[in-house]
Amino acid sequence: MNGLETQQWQHLQEVLRQDYAALLAQLADETLHTAALRRPLPHEVQASPSDNASQRNFEAQHVEAAAHTLQQLQSVRHALAKFAEASYGLCETCGEAIGYSRLQARPDARLCIVCQTRAEQLGRGRAA
Ligand SMILES: [Zn+2]
Image 1 (cartoon, rainbow, N blue to C red):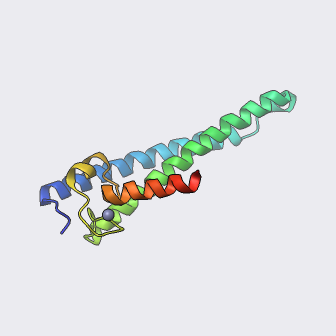
Image 2 (cartoon, rainbow, N blue to C red):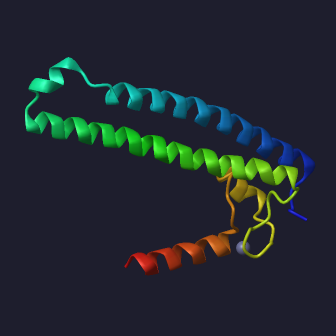
Image 3 (cartoon, rainbow, N blue to C red):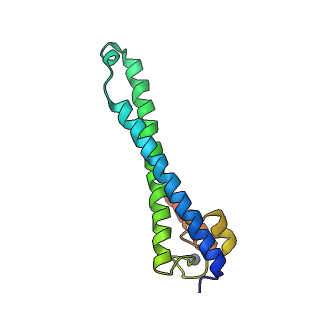
């Protein structure tokens, strides 16, 4: 059991579907911007090295934003796939119910709060 009522389950699925559509549109927009930036402009030939550097920096920010959106998109898609398997709402590590209040805040949450906290602590440990 995932501890969710049918109505809560349906609500979260709807939220995720809307998130998915919004992220898809956002990614398309960001990809378009990035592609436009990559197109060489005539004035770039005369650009000073510092202009080129800031242009690259600007482009990198867009690529980063698009990569972040893609990551979110994959996370939401993963959550939506779990509805089909009826495993949505269950922690992927311990199998316990994640809980409705946590899912409301993070509909694409994969772990319960206990496992999430532990994973974050491990992550910090590795980074330090
Ligand atoms: Zn867990």
